[in-house]
Length: 279
Image 1: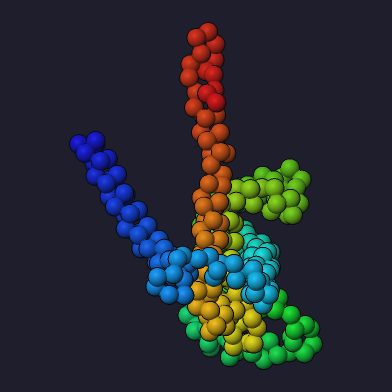
Image 2 (image 1 turned 180 degrees about the horizontal axis):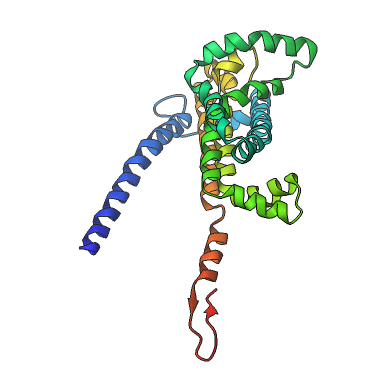
């Protein structure tokens, strides 16, 4: 009976993977097919739309700006959110619900309403600080809070941070050492999940940049689409593949360590002595 259940479970998993794979890959394949079409039905396939990506300076600038925004937002999110969540869990557990409510609040507010509320701040920042597009990271930090909070909360719930921090503090470690050498290594996958979600949100954001008169990747794609639909589709496919590559890197991150840990825990009795670890 167990064998029958395993077979059914494997069939169910394979069916789910095939359906979800088709759901995601068929549209991407159709986009790639459209981006390689010639000027006419009888024309051969061409990669002109893809080569136009590197030939369009404004598009390259927008890609670089979006990648910079993604990196700045991810780092700022970790610096702001992770120490706050750890401190609340250790010292002020009664505020945990309030912090969760504040972090999830941007999900309930439409993006257009957020832009209207943040426009005066954006105008002040342009006049008194800087007009660079990197200033958008301040607003993107608000957008990524709900997704990053959930990822980090799952990682913190999986470890006993109170015991770990008290043990480290009893050995003379400071709070910086506790964060960097005790808590962060034990939730590296959750941190990577939060960073990946932040990068995905920033690379796909359009409303803030467009209404605040900045040109990021999605705004540039919209402008390029008015001139060359194939090039805009090619850039969209490239950004999707980039996010997929990040997801694959995340899925394989830590697997060797897991295998080593499982191998060290697996023991066999030695013929003449104590158990010998299998590696």
